[in-house]
Image (tube, rainbow, N blue to C red; front, side):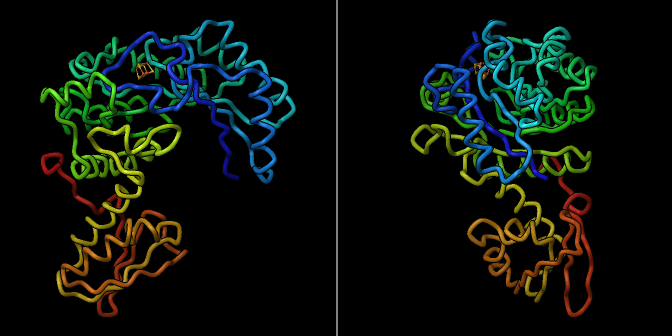
Length: 349
Ligand code: SF4
């Protein structure tokens, strides 16, 4: 049964840093205050009433949880303890910086029900981290991943392709290292230049060029395919268009309200472009859960095939795996996989 996440956005709380891309107030929409114990309990009750019996997880997003005073961390986690004990809550997730977590922190959090820690890894290139004002080196991320995993806590890595000094090859190298470190899942957030940030000033001054939407989609498709090949789930691509992030707060960069779907659709589009020739009439079958990705945002994949002279019909087929499509041309069917059969080259991004 799919877990329901009860989110709490703790904004810039606890974070003494100022990464060039970050405006937590824009991303989280939070006003800088932390939820009280009563507010936490009430929100969990509210979400439980609509969860239809599905397991609940509480997540503290934003900020740097482990940089908060220990007393504050305790106060946030305290109302969850009875709910964890009586089974109302299944687990707790926090996010933090790689240089603010060590074995003692992990043990302390684990004792209080934290089962997942998300790290803002962003890049594993020291020059990129430095140019982005992160204030730590790549070694801190690898060490943090290791010490979290050693204590049996799930670890997720947030990656941010397109930071100052980054290249597609460096983004791929970061992803490969994160895979090798055996993280449990990832989020991919291509850089969005938010108004009011240092990155916005650099962009306006002509000192920084972000990934365009098109390039960000191509790079994310390659990264997603590589993660799928390694069987590591990518649970989110692109910043969420809520919690205060609006079109007005975006100055430039790779932002789209349905970026994840654009990226997944690209995997299908690229595969079909490879295996279907212009002018052919084709029926493409896919798992029902992947129909909207195959069709594309605003039916873009159908329109693109039409402009190649391809007459494409799409049909759901629950027999297929989620990563598979069956391509039928003149009664001959072939099954392809977006994981195995897209041949991406980093040099084409
Ligand atoms: S560490 Fe996180 S919260 Fe702190 S400034 Fe950087 S991105 Fe923002």
